[in-house]
Length: 135
Image 1: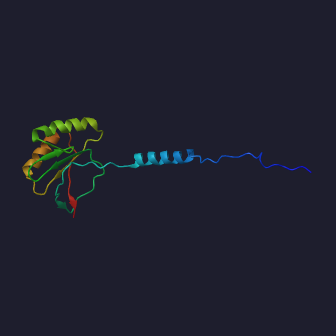
Image 2: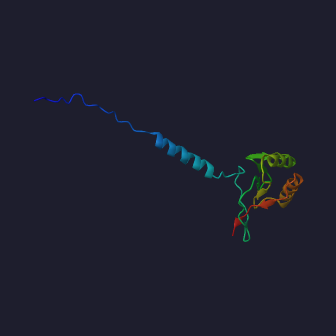
Image 3: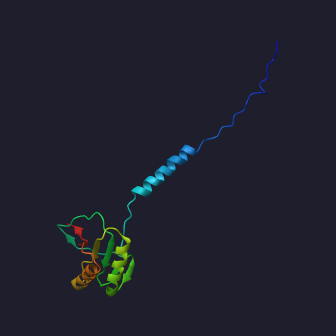
């Protein structure tokens, strides 16, 4: 009678195949990048007035903030009233939709708001909205 030896058995190395997991991670990364909506901010906190007839605007390309002391902020930096038109024209060239949302503080002077809106219109944009809080 012959004896069989168990020493000749093939040893298999066990590995975890990470390729499917990496595929799933990359697909999720692409999904989150595509579906993320980036919030644009003016860089300052504004105490906006409230209005009963306010409507939500889906997209706004250019945001301008007017503080209570009359400071004008575009793209997180303070600009002079005379530079508003040039900044709007520069931002207008970078975007496809031409709309501006002005966030004016409740304590800001109306004269500054009118002058800013006039500079926006001189830059060639007529789609101007005022940001308010819903009543």
